Image (cartoon, rainbow, N blue to C red; front, side, top):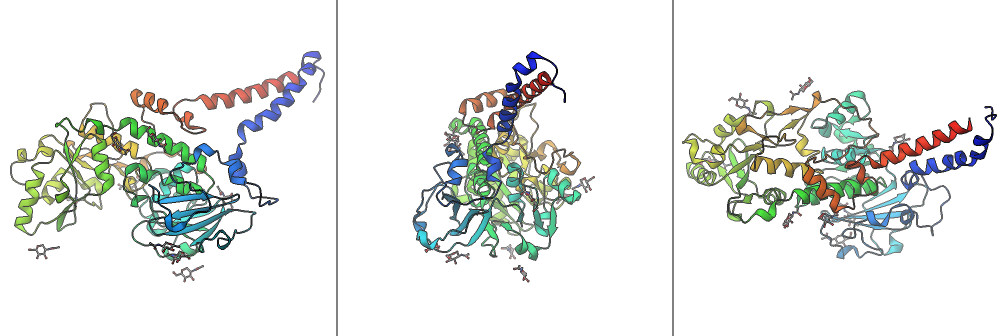
Length: 477
Ligand SMILES: *[C@@H]1O[C@H](CO)[C@@H](O)[C@H](O)[C@H]1NC(C)=O
Ligand SMILES: *[C@@H]1O[C@H](CO)[C@@H](O)[C@H](O)[C@H]1NC(C)=O
Ligand SMILES: *[C@@H]1O[C@H](CO)[C@@H](O)[C@H](O)[C@H]1NC(C)=O
Ligand SMILES: *[C@@H]1O[C@H](CO)[C@@H](O)[C@H](O)[C@H]1NC(C)=O
Ligand SMILES: *[C@@H]1O[C@H](CO)[C@@H](O)[C@H](O)[C@H]1NC(C)=O
Ligand SMILES: *[C@@H]1O[C@H](CO)[C@@H](O)[C@H](O)[C@H]1NC(C)=O
Ligand SMILES: *[C@@H]1O[C@H](CO)[C@@H](O)[C@H](O)[C@H]1NC(C)=O
Ligand SMILES: *[C@@H]1O[C@H](CO)[C@@H](O)[C@H](O)[C@H]1NC(C)=O
Ligand SMILES: *[C@@H]1O[C@H](CO)[C@@H](O)[C@H](O)[C@H]1NC(C)=O
């Protein structure tokens, strides 16, 4: 390198040095420090308080230490407390306690904090997660933590994400037998009943929570294991704001709102679901629910009295969500529904048939349904779909729901290209309706990078930083 270009370059040499100093600061945040181990441990340094911005920690579930475990009650199914270099997570569904501490720090003693022993102790950040269910996979994909993921065979058999299927095919995501989950660093287990606990198991119970947003908020629980609280805040704030901007429930008293029923056929009987999150979706989409006395009722289709009772209820319903399991969703049409429901009397008797609203949750099909995966942390997209099915608009193209009364067919996600590298987080799906964008912007508090979801501003700042640096180099050389 020759510095012979004379006065201008020499005069501004300090700008180039300054740009070299400033540029790394633009890209290296406290996030990257949270991804490293503590090198010279000092018990009195508050590592987490320094690095996790206070405003990303929702006071609804962050509890101060010391906590009285027996008294922990929050609106969510979990609570987190932060120590200087450790975190304590309470999972209220199963009354479990997990102790997490930053790598490079000693394991803190819970006894000295007056707490009972933990059900699992983990070093942060977790680098090799595993799961036996598809549900945690979606949360990991939004957090950008699919790298080094291991799936048990059961989870692998039902994946509904096109990118995860590709990473599996590429060998970036490994599959192990169902009994080998206990050999991984941590295994997030599904919510179907009390899981069998190994020392490395963490119960991930998003679907235990009774509301669409409460289920989605479990991204904050997952993020705790990766020091990714910032990212969880960003994703959830967007999902929450979008959901609330779409929420039509205030129009629920006009008397013209459609009555919605979620039904499924077992091969023998039909059940009307009363699951709280589904009822919430109905109301928030501007629909109405059946009376509580028929919710969770089962109708044996071999018993004519019960068939008649079922049909009597169906004749009052304006929109059906048919959740019947179909091994091959591509072959499930309106004819399957009417055959299973034994509807052969005049179709005009059934409002949901005349108004053509028979909805299925199997629009996106991989090895399993994306409904049981990415729809869980993205209730804003489900709500958007449901609103447009209850109140159809011409231009709408749905994501998770399809209307078989209109002949809509599933999408094979395997045919969608995945161009995103495994370490890159999936961005939540943006509702591009201008009114929603405006409303979400007004809600604010979208986190550090939240604005990138709606506008390219931070990218422009980074490019400006890079341009500035290159310009300084050019002047110097
Ligand atoms: C929850 O766990 C705590 C300690 O782990 C125990 O004292 C308490 O009795 C448990 N409560 C229930 C309902 O199991
Ligand atoms: C969790 O830990 C508590 C306290 O040690 C213990 O009483 C309880 O049995 C553990 N639960 C499970 C499911 O292992
Ligand atoms: C994946 O595993 C490798 C090897 O253990 C580790 O170096 C890397 O940090 C891990 N990646 C993440 C995102 O934790
Ligand atoms: C994991 O579980 C299997 C059977 O369930 C058992 O044979 C094996 O010893 C366990 N391995 C560890 C590391 O706990
Ligand atoms: C969710 O959105 C509502 C309405 O915009 C807002 O009041 C609430 O604070 C948000 N909650 C979180 C955790 O972002
Ligand atoms: C949707 O709005 C209604 C009316 O404001 C409110 O009662 C309901 O809780 C909202 N839904 C969610 C999931 O917050
Ligand atoms: C359904 O009804 C038939 C005929 O009454 C009866 O034989 C059968 O056991 C019932 N099935 C269930 C699951 O109740
Ligand atoms: C739907 O009905 C058709 C025609 O009877 C049948 O071939 C197909 O297997 C059914 N599909 C499902 C998923 O039940
Ligand atoms: C989806 O497409 C892939 C690739 O063509 C194919 O192997 C798979 O069988 C299809 N899945 C379904 C459910 O049709």
